[in-house]
Length: 206
Figure 1 (cartoon, rainbow, N blue to C red):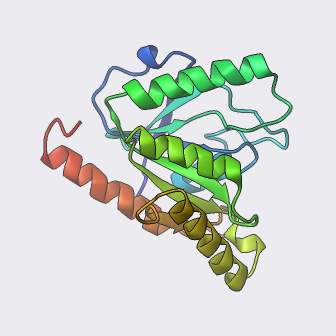
Figure 2 (cartoon, rainbow, N blue to C red):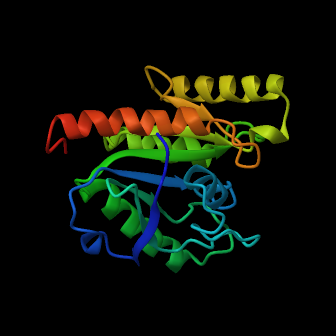
């Protein structure tokens, strides 16, 4: 897939006010400072489509971007940022939960994980929630240019081990990416394209 257009549509904190169009949606979420905005900008060939910041917790709303006029990329707030107040966290968690559990247009979520670190409980817990809620998702490991191939393999193996220990039958589909070197871009966009084709082939698909 080649992205020829990417347009910001709306930001809000109410899942019921998301765009009414029945186009497939792909939601991107991860811990704050995981490199989500940089990844979105890399995928869409836009330097400033998603706002990047050295300050974690920048994204605090549900952000919809229409891609190629036939699907939505959804940028969601990060989870697990320690300096966000408990009240703010609970608000984030509520509208994120509402989005995941009620949004019919959502066909796949991408959970972003910083590959530089070994398996983190907060990521495992979030993916367990996704699995228990039967929300389809894939993993995107980010910042692959920052460590060696050997460490990448060992950290992915650690995640597999943790997930098996948490009663997962298999590791979810995953991608290894780097925003600075465009690693994984083609694989990720091809996956989205394949899912879109299935959705459109089935008409409603939702």
